[in-house]
Length: 234
Image (tube, rainbow, N blue to C red; front, side, top):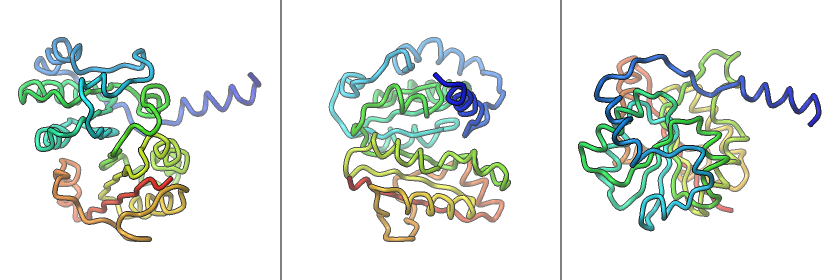
């Protein structure tokens, strides 16, 4: 390995699309991590997954990147039991809360990673295995000097395209207009996708996408909300 490649790898490890927030686990969240995680938790050590085996059935698979505290993901899994859901979140209290609520609801169509989504996609998710990838209200990194940290970049679009089935959809939502424009620019230029709403158009919020805490907060601040849905075509 060259010195240049080594430096590139160090840089990629330093630049994160998320902030690992500090937060103390509640007793209930820790209990869920101890008791529910063995049943619903997934790790990179599992290697490349057989998704039918993971869920014990064949069904459409939806993967959500950064589910926060997990309330909207729980609601979707509860309202759409015919789908399998994989959630990825680095914030352990959020993972604990989701596991606790999934257990209370008796849901068996959710599995969870507490890992960096980029690593999960690279090591655990087979190509052409996902029906939908969701990215709702990611950190906007609104300062111009931080735009390179935004998770929606050409490299991500290509890596997600490989994981989607042909006809599968990458669904994004944000309450930051500048980030919505950035998402539109990146995805409109990405090969192998088409905008479900038509060229340059934003999609209406689907009825099945719950209003999240971040959306409510943005609306209180006077922000709009923009959904973008891009389908893999090839």
